[in-house]
Length: 398
Picture (cartoon, rainbow, N blue to C red):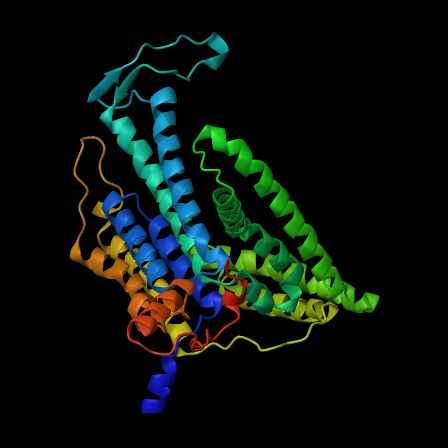
């Protein structure tokens, strides 16, 4: 038992699906409310877990970009409320001159009085979307996109490839920006602001293009995109089962949610649709033949991480269902947002992975600090440092 407990705490990176389930749970909780206190707590929980469990791999550096995008979304929502709809409410903060518009633009107002109710409405809406962006950024910072692609089912491999490439854009750009800035500093270029933008954007785009070409060449040399021969009957069976299964799932979900529909359109239709979809995916998966080299394992730590996010989402949903008065703070009349103790506990469930999952493998900074401590304590310089445990750091910037 003691050995298993010791093995559990060995540094390693978790299964990428575990981090995505955790992040989607928090994003689901954020989508249920516009309470700024609750949304701020969700952002704090996501940031805490990222700081505690991220590595120094390239994709982990993109979390700051997601935070910047989230802040930009909030600012833009408030800005549009000022420009196009700042007149709702009675507490006027600014009295901007209103620009008259032609008759065909009736219903649209440009500038005019700006009220506190309108600004807070824009801030609440923008903060909800920003919180969801931060949650997705947290998943991107913690989950290895290459391991995520390896774990995608064969039937969804092509779709999974497109999704993984899409979510890897920000990490790749973050790494390219760091490489270009490091190269500029080595050459003595320390310009900032708009003057340095031209010297950074062009090299970043060139670096992204070069890396895309290298990735395409590597994927082609490894056989990506090549499918095995499948008889026409099997393809027809796979397509029919997939389409009928998805239709059955849609009808079944509608029957479950709508209590006025006949019973056979509820759970029976949902089960039949899931079965047909599973058969379709299984037959479609035969077209993709790939090897399974060191498959990622799903252990207790993955259950803790995924269960933490799912529990947070379910707990927030149930808490708000029992006491819906704090879901959306009142704007008319203006009221200070309230936050109950049950809500705080529900959101804090999402912070469990920060201290109940194995730590991340040693980062480059940790290795440098350990080397400095060994040198200061008089140990033999140049002693080999502890192993890193995974292949994530093989791609970390030097």
